[in-house]
Amino acid sequence: MADAHNPLNRLSPVYLDHAAATPLLPQVAAMHARLCQQFFANPHAATSLSEDARRAIDVAGRRFLELLGIAEDEAQVIWTSGGTESVNLGCLGALRGRRPPVLGLVDPAAHASVLEASREGVGAPERCLALPLDSRGRFDLEKPVPAGSADAALLAVCHVNNETGAVHDLVRLRQWMVGGAPKAALMVDAIQSFGKMDIPWRAARIDLLAVSGRKIGGPPSVGALVRRRGVQLQPLFFGGGQQDGLRPGTVDVVGVLEFVEAAALACGERASEWTRVTGLNRRLREGLATLGRTCQPQCHSPEDASPYILSVAFPGCEGEVLARLVELENVIVGTGSACSARSGKSSHVLAAMGVPAPVSRSTLRVSFGPSTTEHDIDRLMCALRTALAKY
Image 1 (cartoon, rainbow, N blue to C red):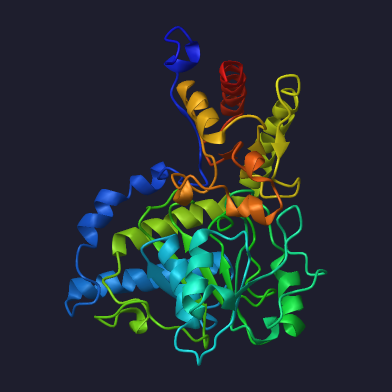
Image 2 (image 1 turned 60 degrees about the vertical axis):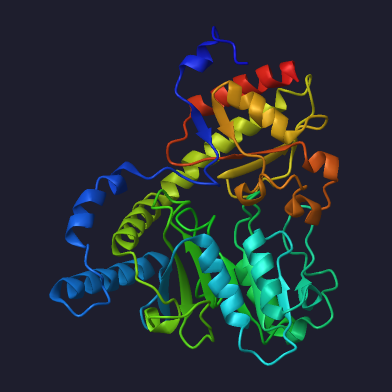
């Protein structure tokens, strides 16, 4: 039980799990009531109010593509219910309808939705081939690649890894694909990179791009899949024919408008926030180095990873227990992907990097957002020292 006399416990909670979800931005929250009153009509009906809603969606789509630096004649935006649906539509939708046997290539450290949707799309796990990684979690294309890669129909990757922040060089990957996987469409999970860093749509010739509102301070129930025009895609479900039949169902007009507003805010401050968060990440790394007498923290995140995510192991501790002890000090961190936090399994991401299971289980994931301050980092360090002393 937390010490009632500890001054940390009388302070507001420090939230450092932004890779799982970022709170709704105040500017976006302030729009909600007005938008609900203005755009309540079904955008797919035939009334004048519906036409207004439909026009608002079209304008939002063009604005969203502009934020990505994509011309309207290059790509189509398909609105979804969030990141998982966007990834599934991109992976499974791109593989469905192809003449079997179908082969796929994946980033073995990708989010579970990327891996499982790709395996489902090819019909058997053994036809979903994993590209080799180095110890930092990035593609090592100097190593032998799986036989059959040249016939793969899809290569699905995470731009920024959701557990370690490792960044894949998508331009170099596309260069490798010219000879290594010439038939494959490139599907990129950009959920942890959108709004935080540049996404090389043209330079990497990305075919499908998945993003989520939840990770940028937008509404949690809205995402998008950007499809390069001409790329084959099959729907996941049916009925209604909305969005060219690729994603049937009524588009959430209010959610889309709020998502695009959050995206505009994030992209507008992207460079300054990158610099600011890099400083916070460095401050935490320096703080962790001072714990050497108590334990020997091991950072899984490479130095050139996204600064928004820091994965660190505390050998000899159980990550879940340590996270609970830290939370008793009113500081909230993660232990890995939120989607598998309750599975009890070691991280497949760290396993793909060659991290032993006991070390993997001792890992915490600290992730930063717009509200994170230096004071939050200092409170985390105090909480870690207290937690480690109790362990």
